[in-house]
Image 1 (cartoon, helix red, strand yellow):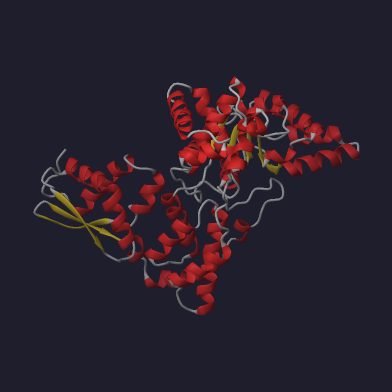
Image 2: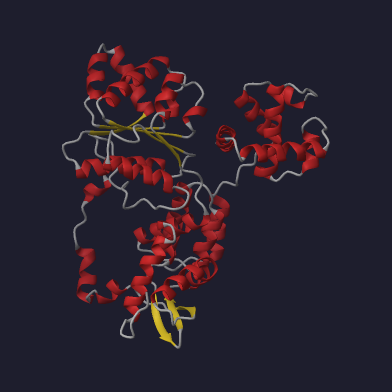
Amino acid sequence: MTTTQHTTNRELWQNALVQIELGTSEASFRTWFRNTDIASRDGGVVQVAVPSKIVKEWLIEKHHKLVLKALRSLDSTIRAVEYVVHRTPPREERKQPRAAAQAAPQQSMDLSAFYIDKRDNLNPRYTFETFVVGPFNQLAHAAAKVVIERPGLVYNPLFIYGATGHGKTHLIQAVGNYFKKAHANKKVLYVTSERFAVDYMNAVRAGRANSFKDQYRQYDVLIMDDVQFIANTEKTQEELFHLFNSLHDNNKQIVFSSDKHPALLSGLEERLKGRFSAGMIAEIPEPDVESRLAIIRAKLDNHSFSLPDEVVQFIAENVRGNIRELEGILNMIVCKSQLKGKGVSLADVRMLIKHNVRPAKGVSVDEVVRRIAQYYEISEKSIYEKTRKKEVVKPRQVIMYILREEFSVSYPSIGEKLGGRDHTTVIHSCEKIKEELKSSASLEQEIDHIRALIHA
């Protein structure tokens, strides 16, 4: 397709954005193509206006080929694309009358948007609209969207797992808030597993066990957070098992979250693990840098606050893993800026992060050995022994592979740590696991479980 001579720059860019959006992730598109436009078009060279230097550099490095391809598919005379920083407010802001802008703060605020409803325990701030989607959480987000389209019929239960602060609670509550808003006739409950256990024990002590059962069986959507906390609670697990069956048999939607894959939850009955695994299991791992940039920009928008590009980039690269930690740092930056009555510098942010962000936790070789030995249910001691027993050889090879691939430990060091073995033995073991991974889905799953166990 080729545009006509009369196609405006605005129309050309809007059509190009449609193609660009199909070629990149939702988070990437929202972060890097917002407030962009064509500044000029001359002699086959298109100048794309971007809001900041960081956006310019990112588009050149990561998305230039995609942009050029999209534009050339619309206008074959385009030969090159350049990016220019053009700091102007978004079109809708420029059109807003001054009087309306000044009057906005005077409007009354709906305080109900800040209170948790005690009837269903849902936080109204946790919605799909405020959930930032990136490569790290795309699968979990997509699964949750399927659930709200066909509740109780597919992905039942939906089981979301990941380390603390990765957005599990936000996503599962977004499911609840959607049903609450879109289906007023459906009864929704969000509850932590700890609250469920306490309520159950209190009901048993008070002789109200049947009332407890009836109360929980009335819900159309049950969302249970942090299910790992009912480990080693026999009676509570039994009650949850029967509740699960009752809701599931009646096509009621069930959503769980945990810090680990259900297969790795020790102290949990096998029949419950089986029920958890019967639906859809999705992990929310640590957010990547691109996703952290998108999250920072979304949070800053919520605060109606801006930061220099270099500061945003520094925060994204140095506050890793925990989104709550990221939010905490941003809250401190906003507060510090308001107290000082001026913007914060990169030096200020460096100091804030240095004193308020926990350093990344290291994992020792002994810890890796301990966790993998525990996973395969063998003794740690056997890993170091000169034995060729099949039940020991495979875990030892997996340990060598994990130490090399996950932690970049040198071959000689791995051999020395694992009983003084020659580095060629370590190389052979690593290559063997790599080769088996190409054809063994079960081994790939085992490695994924082990990674989650080590980094939990």
